[in-house]
Image (tube, rainbow, N blue to C red; front, side, top):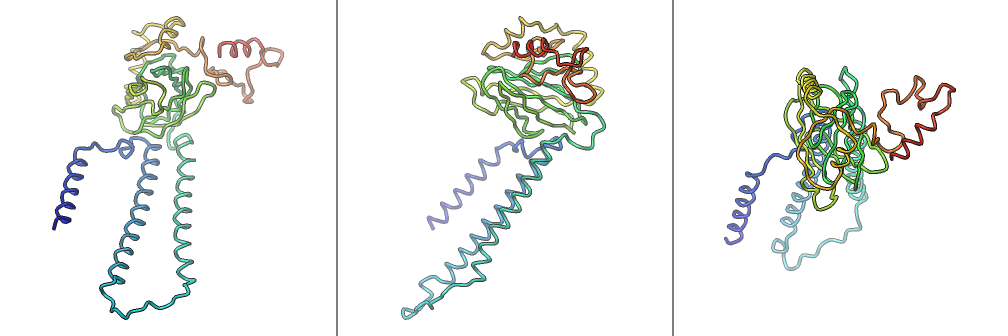
Length: 307
């Protein structure tokens, strides 16, 4: 009787706690990459649930069927050498489960790493750089920069170029896709897209010091028309970003949201080899060259000095 009431009490407590929980953001996707990730999570959960249910059912069945109280005192279990069929069965089942989950994982990894398909426009490139404890978003196509917030158009791929001006950070917008590191000496690429207009939350998911918990940013997905209106308004009202102002922003600390015309990419470019110039490569895909057809050493040295 006591065991019964204890079980009912535990069920009631867990039900009460779970009722007050918000839905998991990763299971409320608003873009194709996030939907792929959510599908993989649910496939894994259901696969594990089936395994657990089958194991528990077999366990209960065996202990009920072969419990000691059911046998006579003279009962002696028969000598069993083993069963080749059973050995093959319970060895092959885990192999098939692991193979299935491996296939799903590899397939989904290639999907989320690639540029989302089904969109007419080319990806909008945004350089997302972190510092203690802020996020700087540079839009080279629009020549504007924001601090701690993002405005993006819906129904268009977004390609983030991630790097850091401090310790390693992890860029993550749970409702749009998975997370990826931003590091000081390299640029990582993360492809996302938003299909549903709305406001989402992004954050640094990697510990990078005492202030990392507040290193968050807001994301607002707008229709293409609303996005164009926002860009026009920024260009008409925002102040230009200077090198002196950018160096102030890099100082450790927490700041609110800010908007600027121009970007820091000109005077403080990303790690070498990733300068966001519209003429970054020529028609053949080679680095910029001077009139003699040789790589411009002055431009290369200046890039390395700035880095």
